[in-house]
Length: 93
Image 1 (tube, rainbow, N blue to C red):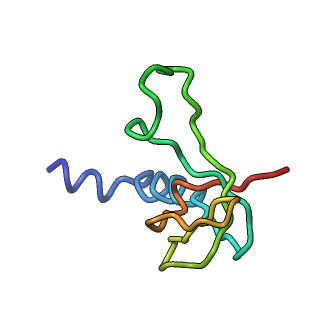
Image 2: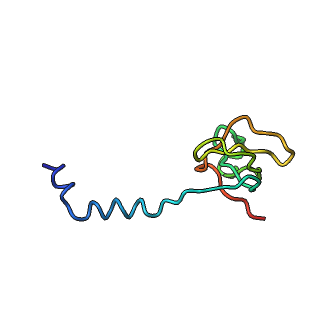
Image 3: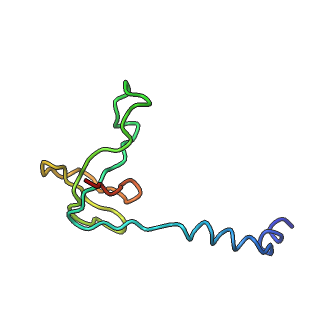
């Protein structure tokens, strides 16, 4: 009975639309400068709460797939794996 109520309730479709309308796909160009998210296993444990949340800047080398990019350090070294756009943000100077 609960399933019938949820699917027939008029606000269910409106709630679903409101959540998905604000999703924006991040697109980067080759050569853009980005920051990558610093995960807990890659930060210094002694820093604890004061550890930086983002690392970089890095350069976009190439698109590695749908929503994934290969990154270069500022010295020109390539990172070993591709990074998803969820874990990247544009770097502004």
